[in-house]
Amino acid sequence: MKNKIFIAIFATAVLFTGSCKKLLTFEISDSTTTTINIIGLPIGLFDIPTPPITTNSEEEFAQNDTKVELVKEIILKQLDLTITSPSDKTFSFLKSIEIYISADGEDETKLAWNNDVESSAKSIELNCTSEALDRYVKKEKYKLRTKVTTKETLFNKVDIKIDFKFQVTADPL
Image (tube, rainbow, N blue to C red; front, side, top):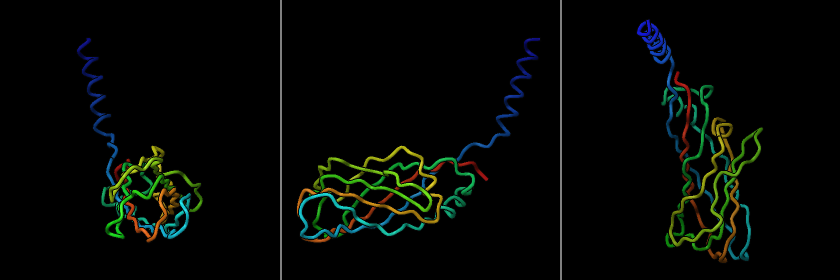
């Protein structure tokens, strides 16, 4: 009798496990550029505008066998900054940086930061929020606002490339 009950429970578990779709997890990448153009201004705190970023998330979701409506969560896994110009410039001028994300109909959220930049490198990785960001990335466009505190007076504009890696969790089609 115990064997028949065990077999019935096992068969039921296999049936339900086989009929459930597993969640998909994949990465999508995005990038944009910004310019720190505070030449000759004293050391201090500045907001740097960034043009709106048009996403191609619907296309990326389709390539990963899902769609916008099936996305459960999007989180930022990595955000890197790289100085692209001038070629000899490093992040030594930067004391701190915070990047905020917003979209139409959504409040602004802190996306990434480094409050103690100690780098003479041309690239740095920021600390990332653990908040779900699907309400921004699923939209057609989102905006970034960058807040920097400098520790040196800049005599040239600095062009920076911002690279994102998002982890997406979604139901399959």
